[in-house]
Image (cartoon, rainbow, N blue to C red; front, side, top):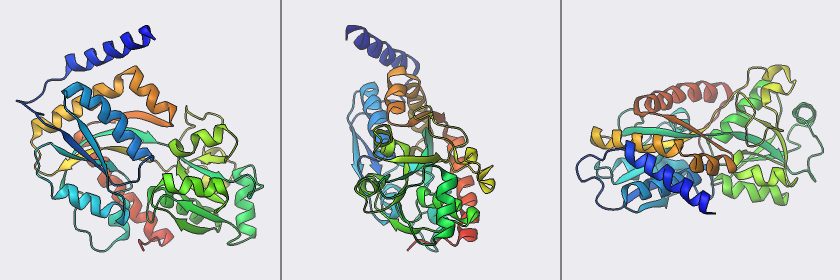
Length: 325
């Protein structure tokens, strides 16, 4: 216990020693808007990183969940906030699905936000209720869905979410057919597949991991390039043996951004703080325990990745005919 405490204190000291605040920033609480429900990967990222950021700057970091509207309303709230570094938001490539599927948006990802950092990669996993889905491999599942169109339902973490895009990309490539049931967040979809209300779900691994380990959900595969260190027994889609999936990859990530016009020294301070926080062994372990992988990228790299994902998702949406409802 003492050793753990000393290790934690040392890691905090290491962070504090390498990050300098601009002026008197921050001198009051920092708000982090999360456009997802509590308990999901975005929420967990905000709370784990936010807790350590609060320790570092000696100010409260308050997480505010504003789920609904597919994240559109939360980003509008962030866009309209005073650009002083006291209101931040969780950035996700789920945000990049909206310009790909909606004609009119009240914000522009290229114009209205200052990007701070990517914090984590969030592996996506296709799971099934083992009492409702007898298949035990992605090959078996694909064959069944091809032979029985509409025989299964699948849940996602929201309309035009990264999870829906990953599943629709898989279905488009393989010709597998399943009925989509969208939920308002992965934390809402998870109990639905656990209880058998739906057959399958494409979820963040952070939501499904404990149930996979307990045998309550069967994992067919992860959509990342390689297997996750949190669940090395679960193959990647590209390892499944399904010919159409040999190069299949669909990443998911979460990070932080702020309203456009937030002062550059504040952005740089926050990015540097997040980088150092993610380097702390205790933080990395906490994230990996729930299926998230620390994956820092700075402001410009985060901006490029978001805008690149908009282009990628636009191509997928056109091919698979995905539209926000």
